[in-house]
Image (spheres, rainbow, N blue to C red):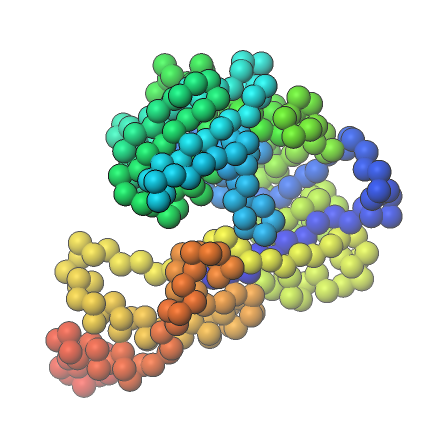
Length: 351
């Protein structure tokens, strides 16, 4: 699992932290362009980042990874987790002025489980037995069986029914110009160049202090770093080399603040279990024991990472700390492969 490294332009000498003021813009640098602004289709980091500013889910995570309300003011969990009743915020409006209601939640759910919609997020919602609109601001969700990620899954951004109900989400024009309930409103998108958002003065949590959010697409990491040095970018992620070495200068100390934090992302080697080569658990375990993960962390990530055994951050309640990572053990790996029928038939050291 990688550690998130980022850098933010430091204008603290010009800021009164006790009385923040409205205005200005932030320029965020990214090596990747967004693919879509339909949130249930957004599977890349750029699309997800922009969607998170335009839309809201029913719930969200706070800075300590606790689940708190977003479009839902509160909720009740009943019947040993089989039933969740969400009580929604009133007086929330979409960016075009239309009112948000429980029908938008129902619409989003139906699209998430629609086999004709190419969403990668259907799995959690196929666990739902029934979603029922009780009134304009109350929704009940009944699960087929107790489902621990159920509440967290409703962090999924809610989409506007009145705009999208007659659209093919796989092809809709709103994939390039979306409308949400979030703190920022879509303004423009120049492919492979930039996406611009402006603050939502009617946002239900209050107007954002930063007026404009500019997402610059700079596909080359080295060029992005040069733009950072030229102060043409305010915020960017860093490679381990940039974080550890290239930003340890007086210029960067003077002009930027660096942040290090656990990333929600992780890198892993997955197996296609339809392939007969990987259907034997001994083969999969052998590959695991044959990889020196610490060498990757120290040599490639320069120490900016850690091993995990579950697809969650270790700080999450769902992470099982009792399961330890497989230690690097090439001899044990060979033994497992031998047990699976792999032999070095010509003595060249390869099985």
